[in-house]
Length: 293
Image 1: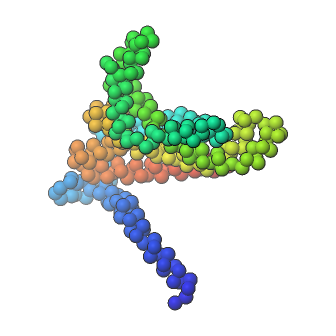
Image 2 (image 1 turned 120 degrees about the vertical axis):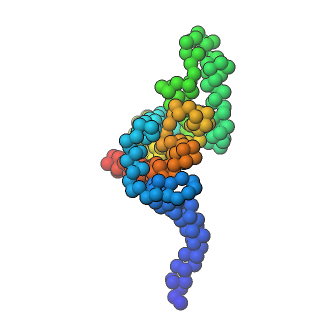
């Protein structure tokens, strides 16, 4: 046996366990979800093939309101891209300059990422409490009596923003760390050359640092959008296990169909649509950054 062939076999054998795990955990469930979406089925009993009926009902039925859930998810994605990521970029650029206590600030900003989402949800439930929550108490103490009586998680027009705030707090450090790694990777010689030419810190960041870390920015944008489309756990905790349905997103709608209404076919159809939407937005972001380049 040739040495090159033997090396290929060895590589394949080393990769085989990971490949089996990847297929079993990711690929196989995708195909099964796609198959189940064409059936009227429950967690038990026989199933009936109905073709595209689940998808037709998903887009036309008022009792499901998929477009309303998708609107909330896109709104969360917009908040993430236009509020969370600029904050993360600002922190990364500031820390990337090598300020005093840089490591301490990195640890502090990244700490919320390590905290359980359930704990964060419970924390913000207390913060948003209309009677004793710190937010309303602070508003009332500053003289804003009307604002200090609001139920932040009890009104539909406020609930989406109230859900985004803990999301912002939890993940701003995650994106900051990704961008910070890119900023630290910029050659110091480029910075020094620009400074010698009379460039300010803002100009160095705008014309040198940000263009260099664009691939990382693209990854952060994709993560922010797809993460918003798949958001579930924090919304589930903040909205009383989804019972209020004030912040319905595709993930909460899918779980509701699967485990509350026992409609596995419809839940699988929503899962397939989520996968398609994530791929679609990832392609759009890739296209936008490619055109900018």
